[in-house]
Length: 269
Image 1 (cartoon, rainbow, N blue to C red):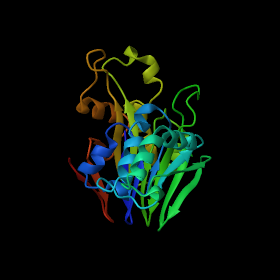
Image 2: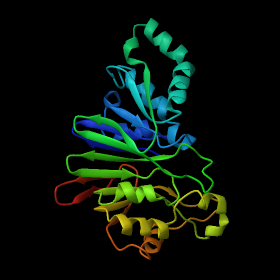
Image 3: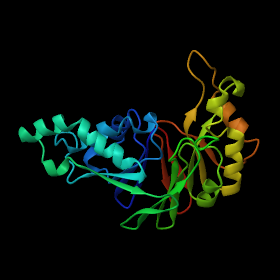
Image 4: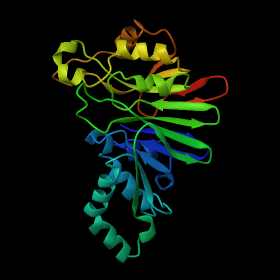
């Protein structure tokens, strides 16, 4: 799971799950030109590509980053950043000793914040981090979402969450609202998983309340191959339409959205 937001020349990455580095390369984004990575929470599917993004970025042949790798998020990101540097210390040391890399490019600088505030403000691009709820009992903490603003354009990324008021509070009127979703042919098949996410009818209610220029599904939890039957995109849309009648897109890897003054243009992968 990973989302790239580009604004005013900045490349901001939200979560860094499996394959994120490969997808960035396929999208034509130089790995040495990532201006910040923002984590929504610490489940492995959101962080297990982080080491590759960091390491590949400072190797001259792959990324050629100048300066440190900046990691942003709630309390706990420093533990992740420091842990990665310790885990890969041997790799870094031999590359420095071999004069392959500049040690000044190999660090991770972690920026930790409490939620519900602006945590990044550079070159007119502001990122607000807000609290969400990943499970009914709030056992999975921290869990946050993000809103990105530049000029009069805005994007909201819900993070993994059940329906919460903060998504409506920060998402009302945004140009693009990217929300997670979970559904199966039989919702009773995985009740615990279902209870940790937002179903399409609930998401439709959120989209109706916020009225984004474009609602987008990402982090789509849709069955378990060979075990629990999922649903096709058409059914996901139909179930959303029970509570929402506005613009809606089911996201795919490498799909991109360009926000213009008049509309949101979608480029298929």
